[in-house]
Length: 459
Image (cartoon, rainbow, N blue to C red):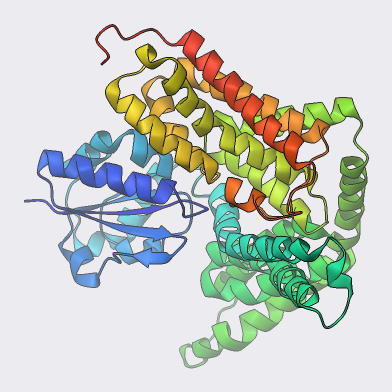
């Protein structure tokens, strides 16, 4: 019997990773196909695939939006898709994998090239590299943001008094965790492009972006610059075999770091800092009309693909601005991200006749995920009825994001949902902010209820 392996991974490593794994495992069990899934989530690598298992596997399914060390599977047929496809189409992926021709060991290089051609150009290019950086940066941002929020329990300005616990918390969260945010983002973008030789120039470039005031945009640029410079040097520098060992240890790190450093200091840093200053000034001085438009846009992006590229783009934009002490977009993004699952849960409560028993049960789970700011809780509903569900979630999230911006809400912590809101002073205008989430959820529930058809046989 043909054995299959799979790897699932999403940028946050919280929901999509495990939902895709569960979907694939359930379908494999139904089809009687042996399948093991490696999950590369926020807790690290779980159920890691061994060399023996890879050697015995007929084919590999990669449902991932981040780097998953694909080189391990050289010589094996590979199905490459985004992680959301693993949730939506497990049967199709398993059938494709089973239909693949078994690869011979000597066919390793051609198979790798074929796998690259078959994969999505978005997820194997810039998007994948960016999401690898974001996924490695997120733990620092979440930890730093929540620790900063905890320091506010003692008062918004309590950290200014040296030697106090609030000062220590601010030093840990802001002075350490947030200080590493941009270097890690840059370093792991470069790592995704060039493997380990990209880390040194990527980290240094990211640190320079922070020091020069180029912010997260500078960090993204330095990451891509470092990765491609290091990758180019690896192929361009030819040495005798006896000296090849010093290339990744001495020559490439020194040259790539020097090139990236000089580029950041003399070419990239100043214009990007100017751009970041303009963006920061604009965001901090938004009038009501512009605030509504920005909130609508961010909110709609969060709900349109629920964890996909648009969702992650909006989230990355808001998280990046935390380093520039701009907190309004983060509040709008989290409100908009909580709204889809909360709104769908509410819809299953107020219009039970529109949903099956299984959907009503799924609604309860979605409600809990919504409270925790896991937008992916809405995916089962959207996958089952996209033309009726997605318009409702987009409208509700756009309303929530716009109201959050208009109310002037700001949020220091980039994750945690309702549980972070319980921390005193973590969010400004708490009552109005909660109202924005509630109103957005109601808009989603009402819209979806109006669009969906009744189920006469529902219990």
